[in-house]
Amino acid sequence: MKIRTRLRRALTRLMRDASFLALGAPLHLLTGFLLFVAFGLVWEVLEGGDTSAPAVLGLAVVTTAFCVPALTVAQRWRFRRLLGIDIPGPGWRRPWRQFGYHSLAGALFGALEAVVVALVPAGLVLSLTSVWVYAIPFEWRIKHPGYSTQAAFVTVAGLLVLATVPSLAAALVRLESQVVPTLLGRGREEDLARRVEDLTESRAGAVDAADAERRRIERDLHDGAQQRLVSLALNLGIAKATLVDLPPEAREVIDAAHREAKEAIEELSSLVRGLHPAVLDELGLDAALSGLAARAPLSVRLRADLPRRPPPAVEAVAYFVVSEALTNVAKHAREATRADVTVTRLGGILRVVIEDDGLGGADPGRGSGLTGLAQRVRSVDGTFRMSSPVGGPTMMSVDLPCQS
Image 1 (tube, rainbow, N blue to C red):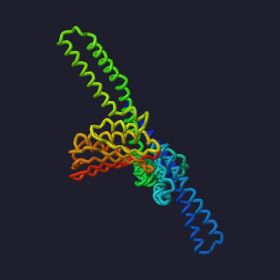
Image 2: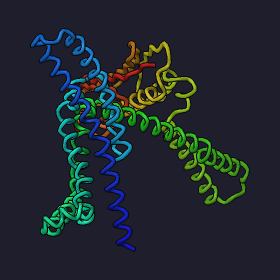
Image 3: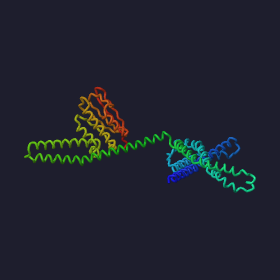
Image 4: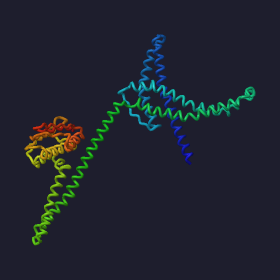
Protein backbone atom coordinates (compact mmCIF):
# COMPACT_ATOMS: atom_id res chain seq x y z
CA MET A 1 0.00 0.00 0.00
CA LYS A 2 2.84 2.41 0.81
CA ILE A 3 4.54 1.61 -2.49
CA ARG A 4 1.35 2.36 -4.39
CA THR A 5 0.90 5.63 -2.52
CA ARG A 6 4.47 6.72 -3.23
CA LEU A 7 4.13 5.74 -6.89
CA ARG A 8 0.91 7.70 -7.21
CA ARG A 9 2.49 10.77 -5.62
CA ALA A 10 5.55 10.48 -7.86
CA LEU A 11 3.38 10.24 -10.98
CA THR A 12 1.27 13.21 -9.86
CA ARG A 13 4.39 15.29 -9.22
CA LEU A 14 5.85 14.26 -12.60
CA MET A 15 2.64 15.24 -14.42
CA ARG A 16 2.60 18.58 -12.62
CA ASP A 17 6.24 19.32 -13.44
CA ALA A 18 5.84 18.22 -17.05
CA SER A 19 2.73 20.40 -17.50
CA PHE A 20 4.52 23.33 -15.90
CA LEU A 21 7.53 23.03 -18.21
CA ALA A 22 5.48 22.30 -21.32
CA LEU A 23 3.41 25.43 -20.73
CA GLY A 24 6.42 27.57 -19.89
CA ALA A 25 8.49 26.71 -22.97
CA PRO A 26 6.31 28.51 -25.58
CA LEU A 27 5.69 31.45 -23.25
CA HIS A 28 9.40 31.93 -22.68
CA LEU A 29 10.46 31.39 -26.30
CA LEU A 30 7.80 33.75 -27.72
CA THR A 31 9.61 36.88 -26.53
CA GLY A 32 12.90 35.50 -27.80
CA PHE A 33 11.33 34.97 -31.21
CA LEU A 34 9.94 38.50 -31.25
CA LEU A 35 13.33 39.94 -30.31
CA PHE A 36 15.00 37.86 -33.01
CA VAL A 37 12.57 39.28 -35.57
CA ALA A 38 13.15 42.81 -34.25
CA PHE A 39 16.95 42.47 -34.45
CA GLY A 40 16.62 41.12 -37.99
CA LEU A 41 14.52 44.11 -38.98
CA VAL A 42 17.05 46.46 -37.39
CA TRP A 43 19.72 44.86 -39.55
CA GLU A 44 17.52 45.35 -42.61
CA VAL A 45 17.07 49.02 -41.72
CA LEU A 46 20.82 49.49 -41.30
CA GLU A 47 21.52 47.74 -44.60
CA GLY A 48 18.78 49.69 -46.38
CA GLY A 49 17.79 46.66 -48.40
CA ASP A 50 14.08 46.71 -47.53
CA THR A 51 12.06 49.94 -47.61
CA SER A 52 9.23 48.41 -45.59
CA ALA A 53 11.54 47.31 -42.77
CA PRO A 54 11.12 50.49 -40.63
CA ALA A 55 7.33 50.14 -40.55
CA VAL A 56 7.55 46.43 -39.77
CA LEU A 57 10.16 47.18 -37.10
CA GLY A 58 7.84 49.67 -35.44
CA LEU A 59 5.04 47.10 -35.49
CA ALA A 60 7.35 44.48 -34.00
CA VAL A 61 8.44 46.84 -31.21
CA VAL A 62 4.83 47.74 -30.36
CA THR A 63 3.85 44.07 -30.41
CA THR A 64 6.72 43.18 -28.09
CA ALA A 65 5.81 46.02 -25.72
CA PHE A 66 2.24 44.76 -25.47
CA CYS A 67 3.29 41.11 -25.22
CA VAL A 68 5.60 41.66 -22.24
CA PRO A 69 2.87 42.48 -19.65
CA ALA A 70 0.63 39.79 -21.12
CA LEU A 71 3.43 37.24 -20.78
CA THR A 72 4.00 38.40 -17.20
CA VAL A 73 0.35 37.76 -16.39
CA ALA A 74 0.57 34.34 -18.07
CA GLN A 75 3.67 33.42 -16.07
CA ARG A 76 2.04 34.49 -12.81
CA TRP A 77 -1.01 32.36 -13.68
CA ARG A 78 1.27 29.39 -14.50
CA PHE A 79 3.01 29.57 -11.12
CA ARG A 80 -0.23 30.09 -9.20
CA ARG A 81 -2.21 27.39 -11.01
CA LEU A 82 0.38 24.60 -11.19
CA LEU A 83 2.75 25.30 -8.26
CA GLY A 84 0.54 27.27 -5.89
CA ILE A 85 3.06 30.16 -5.82
CA ASP A 86 1.44 33.58 -5.89
CA ILE A 87 3.80 36.11 -7.50
CA PRO A 88 2.73 39.71 -6.68
CA GLY A 89 2.13 41.85 -9.75
CA PRO A 90 5.13 44.10 -10.51
CA GLY A 91 2.94 46.78 -12.13
CA TRP A 92 4.53 49.44 -14.32
CA ARG A 93 7.00 50.82 -11.80
CA ARG A 94 9.89 48.84 -13.30
CA PRO A 95 8.95 47.68 -16.81
CA TRP A 96 12.58 47.01 -17.64
CA ARG A 97 12.58 44.16 -15.13
CA GLN A 98 9.80 42.40 -16.99
CA PHE A 99 11.42 43.02 -20.37
CA GLY A 100 14.80 41.87 -19.08
CA TYR A 101 13.33 38.70 -17.61
CA HIS A 102 11.41 37.69 -20.74
CA SER A 103 14.26 38.50 -23.12
CA LEU A 104 17.21 37.07 -21.12
CA ALA A 105 16.35 34.76 -18.23
CA GLY A 106 13.07 33.73 -19.83
CA ALA A 107 14.78 32.74 -23.07
CA LEU A 108 17.28 30.62 -21.12
CA PHE A 109 14.52 28.94 -19.12
CA GLY A 110 12.56 28.37 -22.32
CA ALA A 111 15.49 26.56 -23.92
CA LEU A 112 15.98 24.35 -20.86
CA GLU A 113 12.25 23.62 -20.68
CA ALA A 114 12.16 22.69 -24.36
CA VAL A 115 15.09 20.31 -23.88
CA VAL A 116 13.54 18.59 -20.85
CA VAL A 117 10.14 18.29 -22.52
CA ALA A 118 11.75 16.96 -25.72
CA LEU A 119 13.54 14.26 -23.71
CA VAL A 120 10.20 12.60 -22.93
CA PRO A 121 9.20 11.63 -26.52
CA ALA A 122 12.84 11.01 -27.39
CA GLY A 123 13.20 8.62 -24.47
CA LEU A 124 9.96 6.86 -25.38
CA VAL A 125 11.08 6.40 -28.97
CA LEU A 126 14.52 5.13 -27.95
CA SER A 127 13.17 2.79 -25.26
CA LEU A 128 10.86 1.15 -27.83
CA THR A 129 13.65 0.56 -30.34
CA SER A 130 13.63 -3.21 -29.73
CA VAL A 131 9.94 -3.21 -30.71
CA TRP A 132 9.74 -0.96 -33.74
CA VAL A 133 13.01 -2.29 -35.23
CA TYR A 134 11.05 -5.31 -36.37
CA ALA A 135 9.00 -3.02 -38.61
CA ILE A 136 12.10 -2.58 -40.78
CA PRO A 137 12.13 -4.82 -43.88
CA PHE A 138 13.53 -8.33 -43.35
CA GLU A 139 16.13 -7.86 -46.09
CA TRP A 140 17.71 -4.93 -44.18
CA ARG A 141 17.92 -6.97 -41.00
CA ILE A 142 19.59 -9.82 -42.89
CA LYS A 143 22.24 -7.43 -44.19
CA HIS A 144 22.86 -6.00 -40.67
CA PRO A 145 23.26 -9.00 -38.37
CA GLY A 146 24.23 -6.89 -35.32
CA TYR A 147 21.03 -4.83 -35.29
CA SER A 148 19.57 -6.61 -32.24
CA THR A 149 22.56 -5.72 -30.07
CA GLN A 150 22.47 -2.12 -31.24
CA ALA A 151 18.72 -1.97 -30.61
CA ALA A 152 19.26 -3.27 -27.09
CA PHE A 153 21.84 -0.56 -26.34
CA VAL A 154 19.53 2.12 -27.76
CA THR A 155 16.64 0.78 -25.69
CA VAL A 156 18.72 0.91 -22.52
CA ALA A 157 19.76 4.47 -23.39
CA GLY A 158 16.12 5.44 -23.85
CA LEU A 159 15.18 3.93 -20.50
CA LEU A 160 18.01 5.87 -18.83
CA VAL A 161 16.77 9.07 -20.45
CA LEU A 162 13.24 8.42 -19.17
CA ALA A 163 14.65 7.68 -15.71
CA THR A 164 16.48 11.01 -15.55
CA VAL A 165 13.55 13.12 -16.82
CA PRO A 166 11.72 13.31 -13.42
CA SER A 167 14.86 14.49 -11.63
CA LEU A 168 15.71 17.02 -14.34
CA ALA A 169 12.14 18.33 -14.43
CA ALA A 170 11.98 18.63 -10.64
CA ALA A 171 15.35 20.43 -10.53
CA LEU A 172 14.31 22.90 -13.25
CA VAL A 173 10.95 23.56 -11.58
CA ARG A 174 12.71 24.15 -8.26
CA LEU A 175 15.18 26.54 -9.92
CA GLU A 176 12.39 28.53 -11.57
CA SER A 177 10.36 28.67 -8.36
CA GLN A 178 13.34 30.23 -6.59
CA VAL A 179 14.48 32.62 -9.32
CA VAL A 180 11.36 33.77 -11.17
CA PRO A 181 9.41 35.26 -8.21
CA THR A 182 12.46 37.39 -7.41
CA LEU A 183 12.94 38.60 -10.97
CA LEU A 184 9.32 38.91 -12.03
CA GLY A 185 7.65 39.97 -8.78
CA ARG A 186 7.92 43.14 -6.81
CA GLY A 187 11.28 44.56 -5.84
CA ARG A 188 12.67 44.48 -2.33
CA GLU A 189 11.71 48.11 -1.74
CA GLU A 190 8.14 47.46 -2.83
CA ASP A 191 7.93 44.39 -0.60
CA LEU A 192 9.20 46.43 2.35
CA ALA A 193 6.70 49.19 1.61
CA ARG A 194 3.86 46.67 1.42
CA ARG A 195 5.09 45.04 4.63
CA VAL A 196 5.08 48.40 6.39
CA GLU A 197 1.52 49.04 5.19
CA ASP A 198 0.40 45.62 6.41
CA LEU A 199 2.07 46.12 9.78
CA THR A 200 0.51 49.56 10.11
CA GLU A 201 -2.94 48.17 9.37
CA SER A 202 -2.49 45.23 11.73
CA ARG A 203 -1.20 47.52 14.48
CA ALA A 204 -4.17 49.84 14.02
CA GLY A 205 -6.46 46.83 14.26
CA ALA A 206 -4.69 45.67 17.42
CA VAL A 207 -5.02 49.14 18.97
CA ASP A 208 -8.74 49.25 18.14
CA ALA A 209 -9.23 45.74 19.51
CA ALA A 210 -7.41 46.60 22.74
CA ASP A 211 -9.48 49.77 23.12
CA ALA A 212 -12.70 47.82 22.54
CA GLU A 213 -11.59 45.24 25.12
CA ARG A 214 -10.90 47.99 27.67
CA ARG A 215 -14.35 49.39 27.05
CA ARG A 216 -15.91 45.97 27.57
CA ILE A 217 -14.03 45.45 30.85
CA GLU A 218 -15.01 48.95 32.03
CA ARG A 219 -18.64 48.26 31.20
CA ASP A 220 -18.63 44.89 32.94
CA LEU A 221 -17.01 46.31 36.07
CA HIS A 222 -19.34 49.30 36.15
CA ASP A 223 -22.51 47.31 35.59
CA GLY A 224 -21.47 44.21 37.56
CA ALA A 225 -18.95 44.32 40.38
CA GLN A 226 -19.41 48.03 41.15
CA GLN A 227 -23.20 47.72 41.43
CA ARG A 228 -22.83 44.74 43.75
CA LEU A 229 -20.45 46.70 45.97
CA VAL A 230 -22.86 49.65 46.05
CA SER A 231 -25.67 47.31 47.07
CA LEU A 232 -23.44 45.77 49.75
CA ALA A 233 -22.48 49.18 51.14
CA LEU A 234 -26.13 50.26 51.12
CA ASN A 235 -27.20 47.15 53.03
CA LEU A 236 -24.42 47.62 55.56
CA GLY A 237 -25.44 51.24 55.99
CA ILE A 238 -29.07 50.20 56.62
CA ALA A 239 -27.91 47.57 59.10
CA LYS A 240 -25.75 50.13 60.85
CA ALA A 241 -28.67 52.55 61.15
CA THR A 242 -31.41 50.09 62.14
CA LEU A 243 -29.67 47.50 64.31
CA VAL A 244 -29.06 49.73 67.33
CA ASP A 245 -29.30 47.00 69.97
CA LEU A 246 -26.27 45.04 68.82
CA PRO A 247 -23.24 44.51 71.06
CA PRO A 248 -20.40 47.00 70.59
CA GLU A 249 -18.19 44.35 69.02
CA ALA A 250 -20.79 43.59 66.32
CA ARG A 251 -21.31 47.28 65.60
CA GLU A 252 -17.56 47.71 65.17
CA VAL A 253 -17.52 44.84 62.67
CA ILE A 254 -20.41 46.40 60.71
CA ASP A 255 -18.73 49.82 60.78
CA ALA A 256 -15.48 48.35 59.52
CA ALA A 257 -17.26 46.37 56.76
CA HIS A 258 -19.20 49.49 55.71
CA ARG A 259 -16.02 51.55 55.59
CA GLU A 260 -14.15 48.86 53.60
CA ALA A 261 -17.06 48.60 51.15
CA LYS A 262 -17.02 52.35 50.49
CA GLU A 263 -13.26 52.33 50.01
CA ALA A 264 -13.55 49.38 47.61
CA ILE A 265 -16.19 51.30 45.63
CA GLU A 266 -13.87 54.31 45.42
CA GLU A 267 -10.92 52.18 44.31
CA LEU A 268 -13.05 50.35 41.75
CA SER A 269 -14.35 53.67 40.43
CA SER A 270 -10.77 54.87 39.97
CA LEU A 271 -9.91 51.61 38.23
CA VAL A 272 -12.90 51.92 35.90
CA ARG A 273 -12.01 55.50 35.03
CA GLY A 274 -8.42 54.37 34.38
CA LEU A 275 -9.55 51.65 31.99
CA HIS A 276 -11.85 53.79 29.87
CA PRO A 277 -14.01 56.58 31.32
CA ALA A 278 -17.59 56.59 30.14
CA VAL A 279 -17.54 60.39 29.86
CA LEU A 280 -14.91 60.06 27.11
CA ASP A 281 -17.42 58.27 24.88
CA GLU A 282 -20.41 60.37 25.87
CA LEU A 283 -19.04 63.94 26.01
CA GLY A 284 -15.62 63.75 24.39
CA LEU A 285 -12.03 64.50 25.31
CA ASP A 286 -12.61 68.04 26.64
CA ALA A 287 -15.12 66.89 29.28
CA ALA A 288 -13.00 63.87 30.25
CA LEU A 289 -9.92 66.04 30.76
CA SER A 290 -11.97 68.50 32.81
CA GLY A 291 -12.88 65.64 35.12
CA LEU A 292 -9.21 64.69 35.43
CA ALA A 293 -8.26 68.27 36.29
CA ALA A 294 -11.00 68.48 38.90
CA ARG A 295 -9.89 65.25 40.62
CA ALA A 296 -6.16 66.02 40.52
CA PRO A 297 -4.51 66.57 43.95
CA LEU A 298 -2.87 69.80 42.71
CA SER A 299 -4.01 72.84 40.78
CA VAL A 300 -4.46 72.08 37.07
CA ARG A 301 -5.12 74.70 34.40
CA LEU A 302 -6.70 73.13 31.32
CA ARG A 303 -6.84 74.78 27.90
CA ALA A 304 -8.49 72.74 25.16
CA ASP A 305 -9.09 73.93 21.59
CA LEU A 306 -10.94 71.09 19.81
CA PRO A 307 -13.21 72.30 17.01
CA ARG A 308 -14.22 68.68 16.32
CA ARG A 309 -13.69 65.35 18.04
CA PRO A 310 -10.63 63.26 17.19
CA PRO A 311 -10.95 59.54 16.36
CA PRO A 312 -11.79 57.34 19.38
CA ALA A 313 -8.36 55.67 19.49
CA VAL A 314 -6.60 59.05 19.49
CA GLU A 315 -8.96 60.38 22.17
CA ALA A 316 -8.18 57.39 24.38
CA VAL A 317 -4.41 57.81 23.98
CA ALA A 318 -4.60 61.55 24.70
CA TYR A 319 -6.71 60.93 27.80
CA PHE A 320 -4.37 58.30 29.21
CA VAL A 321 -1.33 60.46 28.49
CA VAL A 322 -2.80 63.34 30.49
CA SER A 323 -3.98 61.01 33.25
CA GLU A 324 -0.60 59.31 33.64
CA ALA A 325 1.26 62.61 33.39
CA LEU A 326 -0.82 64.23 36.16
CA THR A 327 -0.36 61.14 38.32
CA ASN A 328 3.41 61.34 37.82
CA VAL A 329 3.40 65.04 38.67
CA ALA A 330 1.48 64.41 41.89
CA LYS A 331 3.72 61.51 42.94
CA HIS A 332 7.19 62.37 41.68
CA ALA A 333 7.45 66.08 40.81
CA ARG A 334 9.27 67.66 43.71
CA GLU A 335 7.74 70.90 45.02
CA ALA A 336 5.22 71.04 42.15
CA THR A 337 2.18 73.17 42.98
CA ARG A 338 0.40 73.37 39.65
CA ALA A 339 0.27 71.84 36.18
CA ASP A 340 -0.77 73.26 32.83
CA VAL A 341 -2.47 71.02 30.26
CA THR A 342 -2.89 72.34 26.72
CA VAL A 343 -4.70 70.36 24.02
CA THR A 344 -4.89 71.84 20.53
CA ARG A 345 -5.65 70.50 17.11
CA LEU A 346 -3.31 71.72 14.39
CA GLY A 347 -4.62 70.44 11.07
CA GLY A 348 -4.06 66.70 11.12
CA ILE A 349 -2.19 66.72 14.45
CA LEU A 350 -3.58 66.62 17.98
CA ARG A 351 -0.95 68.19 20.25
CA VAL A 352 -1.02 67.57 24.00
CA VAL A 353 1.38 69.53 26.22
CA ILE A 354 1.67 68.97 30.01
CA GLU A 355 3.91 71.27 32.05
CA ASP A 356 4.52 71.53 35.80
CA ASP A 357 6.48 73.92 38.02
CA GLY A 358 8.44 71.26 39.89
CA LEU A 359 12.20 70.93 40.21
CA GLY A 360 12.53 68.70 37.15
CA GLY A 361 15.17 66.00 36.75
CA ALA A 362 12.80 63.38 35.33
CA ASP A 363 14.54 60.77 33.16
CA PRO A 364 12.37 58.92 30.59
CA GLY A 365 14.92 56.10 30.53
CA ARG A 366 14.51 55.35 34.25
CA GLY A 367 10.89 54.54 34.71
CA SER A 368 8.38 52.12 33.27
CA GLY A 369 5.63 54.76 33.48
CA LEU A 370 7.21 57.17 31.00
CA THR A 371 8.33 54.26 28.80
CA GLY A 372 4.78 52.95 28.73
CA LEU A 373 3.51 56.40 27.80
CA ALA A 374 5.96 56.62 24.90
CA GLN A 375 4.96 53.13 23.69
CA ARG A 376 1.26 53.99 23.85
CA VAL A 377 1.87 57.17 21.85
CA ARG A 378 3.86 55.24 19.23
CA SER A 379 1.03 52.71 18.93
CA VAL A 380 -0.90 55.32 16.90
CA ASP A 381 2.17 56.68 15.07
CA GLY A 382 2.51 59.59 17.46
CA THR A 383 5.64 61.33 18.71
CA PHE A 384 6.63 61.71 22.35
CA ARG A 385 9.00 64.42 23.59
CA MET A 386 9.98 65.31 27.13
CA SER A 387 12.13 68.04 28.63
CA SER A 388 12.96 68.00 32.34
CA PRO A 389 16.15 69.94 33.19
CA VAL A 390 17.32 70.00 36.78
CA GLY A 391 15.57 72.93 38.44
CA GLY A 392 12.52 72.66 36.23
CA PRO A 393 10.17 73.08 34.64
CA THR A 394 9.19 69.67 33.23
CA MET A 395 7.36 69.66 29.92
CA MET A 396 5.88 66.69 28.09
CA SER A 397 4.72 67.15 24.48
CA VAL A 398 2.80 64.56 22.47
CA ASP A 399 1.74 64.82 18.81
CA LEU A 400 -0.94 62.37 17.68
CA PRO A 401 -1.97 61.95 14.01
CA CYS A 402 -5.59 62.88 13.64
CA GLN A 403 -6.84 62.71 10.04
CA SER A 404 -10.60 62.51 10.44
